[in-house]
Length: 156
Image (cartoon, rainbow, N blue to C red; front, side, top):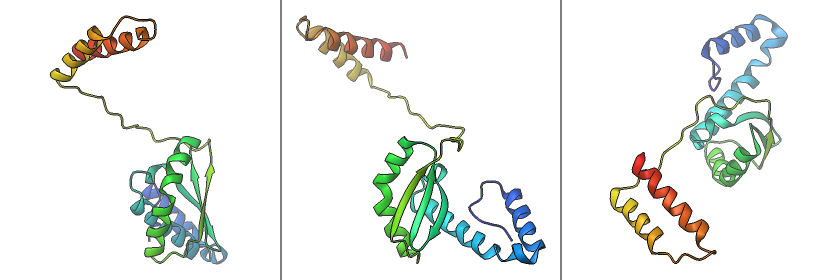
């Protein structure tokens, strides 16, 4: 048996074997499986955020999720109504949700970033804009930023 939702598959087999090895511990197996199922359903409801949150507890309709930073918590907070509706649609009786920031939790190793690629016409338009703005003290910072942007896009 495998506890779905765990990040390390061999570890999940070791955990289930450990839980089965002792009669008292075996009583925890259904709870562990239920939490793993809930973690999987959270991941299916919010695939983009799945790597950034873990189910901490689910008692009396209150779902508590662990997040690695307040920035992730702020993004996830916007998705809570969608998550709650999705989980309720899957049969989970979620009445409320709480987020708990756990800064000791490691951030994902690889962060996805995208570089803005501007077509040649856009770079040319920025250059023209920088040249056409009146040279006033109020515009100095804007003109410098536009020219830096155009120059950077020309080189890169």
